[in-house]
Image (cartoon, rainbow, N blue to C red; front, top):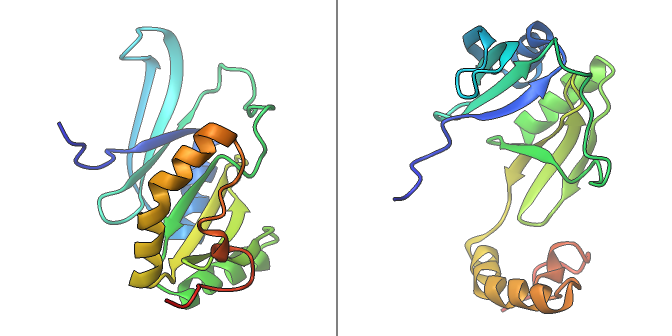
Length: 180
């Protein structure tokens, strides 16, 4: 078996309607489906929910659950807030910067752009507090080949030492991609 694609990725949200409107306004995602039940189909737990589905483009679906009978949303306190995020690719720096300007005009804090050498990105949070990233690819074929060539060395070194391998330090050290 080989995975064909993600059918959908689901998160919890505080308010389904607000989430639909926010993702439509700032990320141009169309609202495509709502499912509401009083019982969870897989577990049969009595638990009313609203399950919404948004079109993230190219067959990608982003979904959310509003769970009014559960305790308020929280996060894993042992995981830094920057770690868990959803990164979405856009086609150009212009598109990314237009999205940033729209959000900032409405008071949404946006970090970046951050230069990761092979892509540039901005970071922000949705109304439920989920960290999101918009990214524009900037890597060259040579950069991507070099990263591919060292990936197993890096993961094996990390597994042994739990210290950051330096095989791809050029991505963030400010010195740039090494000449061949």
